[in-house]
Length: 380
Image (spheres, rainbow, N blue to C red):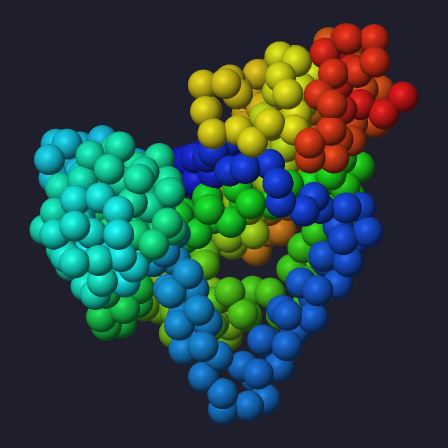
């Protein structure tokens, strides 16, 4: 519960760093998401049961490749903060390009170089950037700095250690990759409106209930494919119980929480933070690019969603322990999340502004005609 909640919190807060320029998730797209998820899940099940295709290997290649990149991006701020400036700003690698700052002057403007120290101003001149992470442009090529090399090294080390483990996966390494994957993915999905995100959660709730209670498909796929796209926690199974078990799920040595049970509620929590709190509570510019988490403080809607997520998970785990059967986590999470928002809105006298909320088009005026910031982004 702590691992999943941490991934959700980091992903939702990290979404404030992402430019608010991505295409918004519409109600129509939200309605088709459960259909696409069902097709993918059933397709994987059919490949596992009726073919000799190594589905696990295919999923592993995809999830570990994407997961490594996500771990690196999650480690970037940490590496930037712990390294001294001389190491942090050291140009560990420069690929291609020419002209620009100290690295370009020393290298003759082309090829592959390393070992230069570039200041923020020099990096901006060479790359057309602000001297932040990997720069590209302005004829200066691609610059990889010391802090990024540390982040890449740590991410690759985690992935290699995970892949080379024989037998059951190392649950700590798997959870690190899964957590980074969830946090990064959910930060890029921006619902257009409250109706869109509520519709997405409701549709995926029906999907979760059907495939968990209505068939063996989801549980079978979850325990048959060991990839870092789920959260694991060891559980003790006696040899007698494992031998007597007639299902792979009963003998599986881990408790499992799917990545979707973090990503989907995380998208909702990020919506509460970046739409409802930012616009309705604090009256900030809904079309701003973001970039400063301090400018998007956690307000009542985000706090309510986070508390509802923890409470929903606790109830789900409790029912699982009592019933000894797989549970669709969204059955408990979706009512808790939506209910927490509506209850908070009612208590604040903002019920209809929340229900009717729709994000303005990027670049549109941030204030309503009457200048009331609490009405920003809300339909009449």
